[in-house]
Length: 484
Ligand code: TXE
Image 1 (tube, helix red, strand yellow):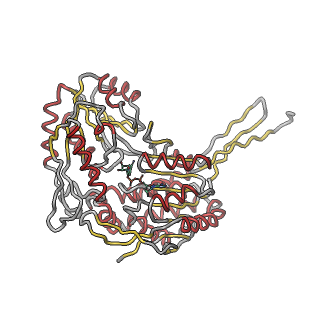
Image 2 (cartoon, rainbow, N blue to C red):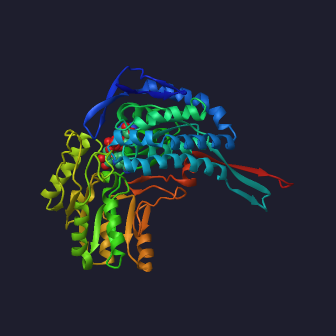
Image 3 (cartoon, rainbow, N blue to C red):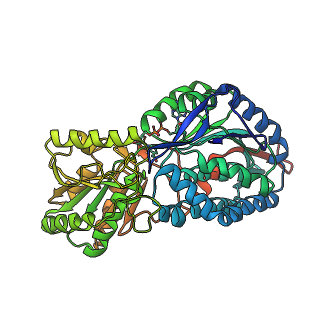
């Protein structure tokens, strides 16, 4: 059985404990590989490798770093189908999605930061009266930690490690133990691209063991984390006494506001996607739809009909819209929320059942599920489920829509469907979310800041924000002239 090994100091290594975790294929429910169950000793070895690589890497000319990142991007592209197949097998997502979104985006992350680092500049301020020149040195932090989740495995892993190494840091990174395969395969690409050994070290294993060891390591200067809000809280508590720099991208419970004056067909079609893409397992999915009363009944009926047409199936089938959810415990979590919602008084409009796919009877398949609610305070409206499940609720005024949208502890993204420019501006300012999409969804320009408000996290990544996070700004003040 294939073994998923750590990639430390430019070579694949077994975990020092000799322990392994089972890796399940969500589409079949079968164990198909073994994952290194690493602990603090492996993290320590990864840290040593990173520390030793740092002096040379941080002094490598930016053009050379940039060329290596470009090469990594090229090699990811050359391996597109192999990586997409691996991603789909490991995560359960449709192969078509991995081929068109996940892997191209992983390549784009390296390409983008290879370019961005050559344009990253700092400020200079001359104080004429004081005869001083201040400039900001932007220095890499040293060894940093990157911890990523299972929903967009290589996409989010590279979103963190690419800016970290572009800025001259060395990295100890851990992908999710639920979906480690593509990060494991990336090791070969890093070697082939000529990334010096020790610059990027990949340690596999569980959150409480390998992940916790990264956060607890006293000399790892910063942590970039994407995952659940509870884990983020725990990481913040662990890291606080060490004054580590933190970027936490956490959960979401994103509102999708549909006004009567919207482009109806576009709002309808995109809302199907924003509810169920990647089995609803994207932190940016719109899991709460609020629809204006004037179009509510019509929109509800049309939405249900469109969702009924979605094909649940094996991820490798070309006509599959909804593949398998990521794991058995996750499937049970989503099912428990459906049960809870019904108990809380929600009406099931469609779905709610597990689906059996012939030949893959033990796979984790769920129908796309639509629930109608009339109470914004119930748990199904307040808690992140992160599965193929969306709620519909009616509103009668803009003020009410805004209050409903903001009435949760999360604040990652919000989507707004309207043709009214004044309303667009009013709501864009008042919505409590790090990203507001207007008449679109999941349009991501890599130059823009990305992150959440409230319990969706702290810090921003993306574009120069990521390079700012992964560097220490140091002010240098030089006096010149004859002033005493
Ligand atoms: O995330 P975890 P899980 C949400 C979603 C999901 C829930 C739990 O609601 O159902 O979180 O998912 C590592 N120290 N999101 O359990 O546990 C872990 O090994 C250091 C939202 O998978 O937060 C993995 O690499 N690291 C989300 C990463 O953290 C620790 C994406 C995320 O795992 C750790 C995924 C610890 N103590 C889930 N414990 C989004 N916003 O995109 C765990 N980890």
